[in-house]
Image 1 (cartoon, rainbow, N blue to C red):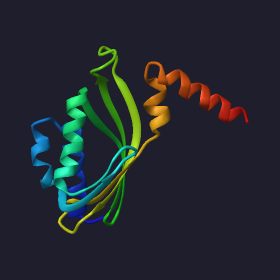
Image 2: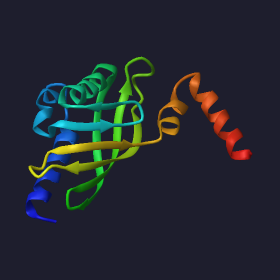
Image 3: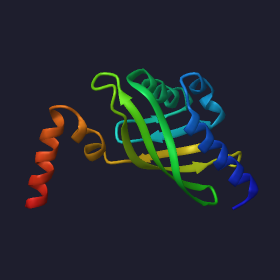
Image 4: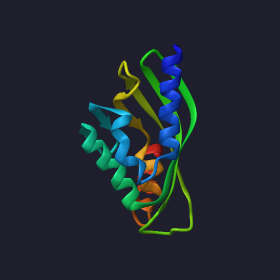
Amino acid sequence: MSNDTRAAVDRLCAYFETISPQSVAGIGEFYTADARFKDPFNEVHGVPAIRGIFEHMFHNLHQPRFVVTQQVVDGAQVFLVWEFRFRFKRFDTTTEQVRRGGSHLVLAPDGRINEHRDYWDAAEELYEKLPGVGALMRWLKRRANSA
C-alpha cells in the first residue's frame, strides 16, 4: 500500500469517526462528484444524495457515531469494519444502540470515495430491536431456523 493510499484511508476513517451535522456539509471533500452509495435502505448517486443520507441520519438519531475497528486495504479497494453507535429519537433515548457492519470503498486516484457499499444485517441489527416489530422478527427468525 502506498503512503498516499494510507493517508487517504486514515483521512476517511477520521472523517467518519468524527462526522457531525456541521461536517456533513463538506462531504464532497471525501466523495467524488459521481460517487455511488448503497446500504440496506438506500441506493444513490452523487454527492448531494449521499449528503442527504447523512443529514437524514442526524435528523433521526441522537449522537450517531462510527467507530472503525478494522481496515483492509488492497490498492484502491478498502474494507472498513465498524460499529455504529446511536440513540433513537423516537424510542428509548437513554439506551445506546450498537450496530456492527462493514463498508466496501473504492477510491478514486485522488483518494476520495468513488463507490461506497455498506453491509449490515438490517433484520438482526435493527428490526429485531424495535418495539413491536422486534418480537415478530425474532419469531420469524426462530421459525426459519427450526425448518
